[in-house]
Image (cartoon, rainbow, N blue to C red):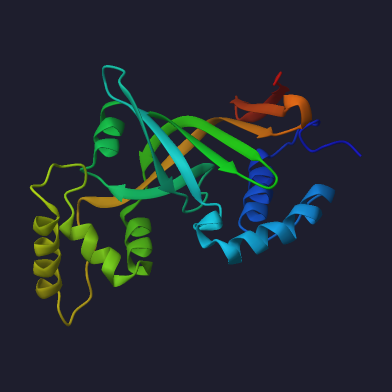
Length: 223
């Protein structure tokens, strides 16, 4: 039986979903997964940070208007209209860079089996309704932090931040915490998706998908 990266998939999003479900512990696919899956669960129990976010941590790379790159880890929050969704402070460095340069890239990396998925494309804001819906699902402490933290800005010390947290807690005591106008979601609309899986002797499998005229085309890449 051919490996799934050896053949073209009409819908690469379905392949990504299978890999994500596998990394999240929700599915087992393939012979090697059946061997590694019990070990992965054992590691999660023995050392929780091993799968702290269930496979949803991803690296977001942006660049300023003059081309200065930067990268950080954010959390995957789903697929929407052939794009990858995440949420953040719209006043943060990443958001300011995205306002100046909408091109961005995302990378997932998972272990056991070792896989990567890379996305490149353009960033857009999601609707206010989507941002409101996700905001309402967040723990209250995270909502308070969303108001208190002026993300990416310099602060005198941690005490300054904690004083702001107390002030916000008092402001919204006894009521729900509304979504700040400076906080919400982004979606990376993918123009290319690359799948990578580790193999012996570093002869890794790679397949890159690119969307042309509304159709996904793909090619194998040398490792």
